[in-house]
Length: 166
Image 1 (cartoon, rainbow, N blue to C red):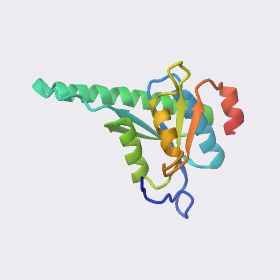
Image 2 (image 1 turned 90 degrees about the vertical axis):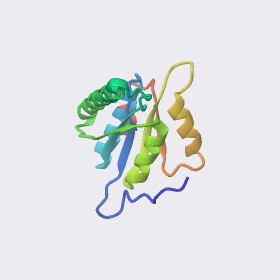
Image 3 (image 1 turned 45 degrees about the vertical axis):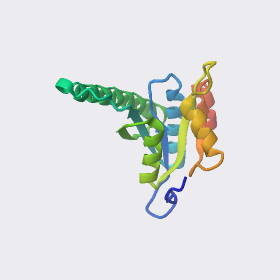
Image 4 (image 1 turned 90 degrees about the horizontal axis):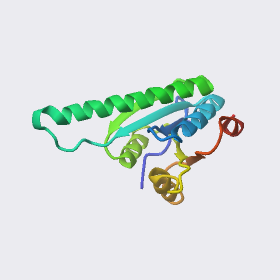
């Protein structure tokens, strides 16, 4: 995977922490950690929500309705996460909504924004494992990913996160 060089610390740039936002219970852990780090470092926070593309239901505009509903749901998730970021660290995040496959859209955004310096994900706490994004990106990050991936354990308390993130 070859991506544009990161420019986060060059003059006129500031590092950004990218957090993937979804409706999982552990998402708030990643948002809190990233917001606290961003506030501590003077960096920026970018939150990304992705909706799967609706199936081809163009009959009577059903596809358009499904797209609008997906965008509304993602916007609500982003707003809830923004409230968490403001409450945790007084940070106002940049919000991005995309339609597509989660992994693909994360990679596209990283490619488009050379200031993104870290990807922050939260690991699930279920017996089924940490979750598909964590599993995928952790494996890739160990060898070829273009930036560090921070995995926040879903079991950390607010106090634990605050002690770690600043």
